[in-house]
Length: 209
Image: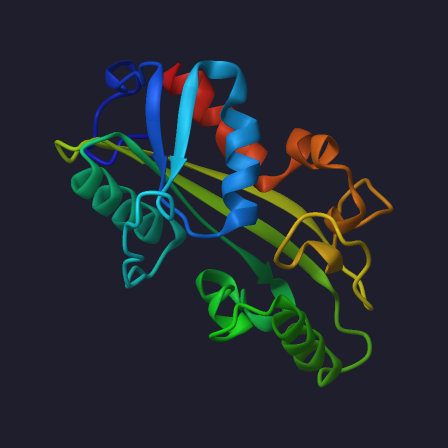
């Protein structure tokens, strides 16, 4: 999907070489590096380049991914890939959604964020469902301002207490549909095969490589 309204036939291809990963989240950068590994891409993180983190002023995952990618591409002079993702809990009206990272506070402590979600759910009637889904929006931007974007999703249910020390963010409380373990208990290869980020990456790979 193009940020400039192009038809699918006009999607810009990504050449092998350096690509800025517009994130300061080490766990997210690690996952993206692994997903890009087979395609001749040399990922370099925004943190490695001392690029600033922009204010995420968008009202959607796609909008926030685009602004991060465009800033990184403009400042680095290289193509840049940004991810904006989050947890959406049905019983909480889709929260924390685009504010998922902000629920972890200034210290980015996701134990705090997971507890906040659980406390909100515990305050609801006991029969309240625990359905949730992750969303991942990827925006690929070039220094000339061209943008392509892709959005993936993974559905599941929340569990408590948190389980597993793999992954990052809300992974220890999210059990994807069809599985008995949380993202936090899965080996990275298993998560990469079926996560919201993997879904978005499949679309990106099919379009730009």
